[in-house]
Length: 320
Image (cartoon, rainbow, N blue to C red; front, side, top):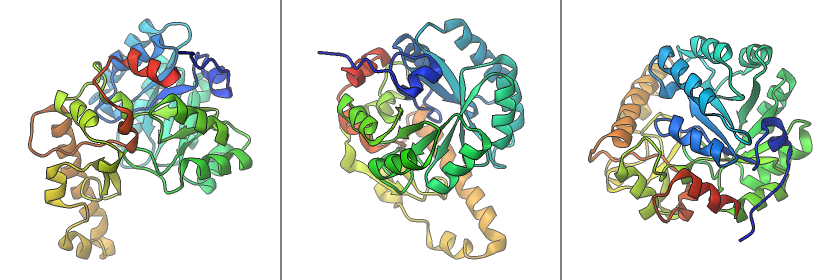
C-alpha cells in the first residue's frame, strides 16, 4: 500500500515527515510513546500535568531531547488557566530545557506565547470557535488546533468539516484538526477541509507503549464509536467516555444535589472543584489500576482500533 507523503505547513513548521501530532492525553501519554512517534516521522506531545513535580518534567524533557531523531518532533501541553497552579513553573522549565512546540488549553495563551517565542518554541492553541481562534492569532500563535465535536475528552460543538473550513477561511495561521481521525481516509478528509495537519489521540490509547492498564487498552478495542457518551460526572464539564456498565450505573448527568448547588453563585465554584477532584481520581484509578470504577476517556475514533499495537504500527495504519 502507498504511504501518504505530503508536505503541509505543519510538516514545515515542525520538520516532520507526516502532518500528524500524537495528541497529548492526560495519564496516557509518556516518553516512550512520543519517542516512537518521532521515529515514525510525526510529532508527539505530553501534558505537563502528567508529571507530579517539575523535576520529573525536566527529566522527561532531557530524555526526549536525547531521543530525538530527524523527521520527528516533540512538545508539551500546558493548561494555562488559574486551575493549574503549576503552570508558571512548568512554562519556565519547558522554556529552559527547550522543545519544538507547546500546545495550550483552557485559558489565555498570551504569556506562554511570549515566553516560548523568546526560547524559540512554537505555540499551537486549542480552540473550539472562531472568536477564540482570532484571539490566539492576534496574540501570535503559530497555529490553531481546531477541537471539533468528534474529539475525545473535552470536545467542541462544531463538526470537523464545519470548524476546520470556518477557521481556514477566517485565519491566516495554519489550522490543525483535532478529533475524528482513526485512519488515512479521515486524514485525507481533514486535509480536504483545509487543515494543514491533524491531532490524533484516542487511537494511541491502545498502544503497547501507553502508560495505562491493559483493561483500558482492550476497552478501546472492544468498544466503538456508538459506545462513546458525554458525561458531566467527571470534571463538571461535558467529557466523552466509554459507556461501560459503571458509567451506565452512575449516569452521565450531574446529581440533583449538584444541580441545585451549582445554581448558587457562591457555591458553584466549590461544587465544581469537588466534582473535578473526585472525577479525576476515578479517572486516574481506572487508567492505572484494576478497578470496577471504569471511567475511561476516549473519542469515537476508537471505532478503527482493532488490536493493541505498537505506536509505529498505529502510525503505519494512519499513513497507508
